[in-house]
Image 1 (cartoon, rainbow over the protein chains, first blue to last red):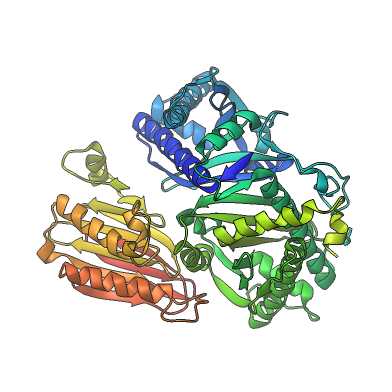
Image 2: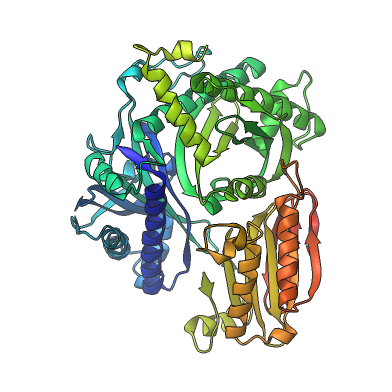
Length: 434
Length: 178
């Protein structure tokens, strides 16, 4: 299967419009005001699907669909907001569990019909769906488990040896058992309820076969199409880059650091700054050159920044405030995280990746990303976004690595990537990353 | 895009009796127009420029959060609000449709910072956004009566439609009311 940039763009718009329709139906029925915040298509590890829901209690509806596209989809919202929705629909119903549940079903049904109809219109084909079923659960358990048929991206044979998974604290790279890549496409929309910090999520997990057919049919020209397995491999390499970055942090701070979710997403350029919260972040930004060129951000929320910076300092600081010393430590840290990431990347791509000295940033998250998105946005409507996270259990600390590469150059790099690799009978990622 | 207000909607009736004015969030590359007592907010402007245009006598106001200077420089023509020029033109059209009089329109601008400008040639995107925004407002003879532009910090905005007051918040200083 090849993924064509135009068709990814079209799919993204469609997912967004579907979510808009779904939201409009909900607003009409309840009088509540909500807007679609972010829509993106991501390629993620099967185990990481729904990672964003961690820690919450959700209710919603889910169903299977089949036809031109097939798979599973779910609309979920957190339990508390479901009560408000029920109340808006039938006053007094929130207290009655059966009534509340039927409100959720009703709203879910209406919203998701709009969503699926939008897809069917776009494809000019019929998409049948099963009756929506009420779902409830904690975190990602509320979502349908991506079935064996979900659009899994298998690594090419040459990369069978890639190791992936969690390598907590080994300090020597990934340690999980090898195997083929196991990543799935997820189409996701986030709907925000105006004035409240409440989010609804629509997840769509398409099956591989039909999605591949639709993507091939949509692909207008050979130019611009990326074989999807390359995207998968790229994702996996980014994971390893993040692991290297985490190892560097561990070496420097002595704090066990884990590389977490890595995903490659595709989103309209104006949605790129929304990937980062509105809170204040501290971190570094570099511009990198080569193929691809782009920007790399290492961002810590303020609390994490203070914690990690203190861990790096020889003397104890009493202040909870972010001082110049903290900032200096963050700058250094940003530098080694960037190097770890970029080195891994350069080795895999086998091209030099140069980068500017890191610039320290301390500002509203979105305001940091927006000038970078605008730079990239002068040449492209949509952007690939590489998003990795590092966490540790020892102290409260989290960091995000966001990479915003030039789309055309990324395509070119991917094109060259496996041409090189195909000559090798056996690829050993340990060696590649040496 | 949402247009709030109008003549006899229920929302407006509710808003009039509610204690807090209606809040409308304007995202990146979005715009919004509201009449009566409403608050339009937008957050995280870096090099993006926020342009507020209002007609105090008609109590109509609008806000656009533009990311790039000019639509003419792009192949794409889809989303006006992504661009300073097309976004302002769209905003003026919709304000007039909501009853604003062009001759009494006033503008306030904020944003367009130079943060993270890696470009080595010519002015950065923030400065270009501001420049094109100004030029477009001149096309309509709309005076810019207040501004908080440039610098190296991000901003969040809050436009109070009844008064046309634009409250600018920045990470490193107290808020300013324009």
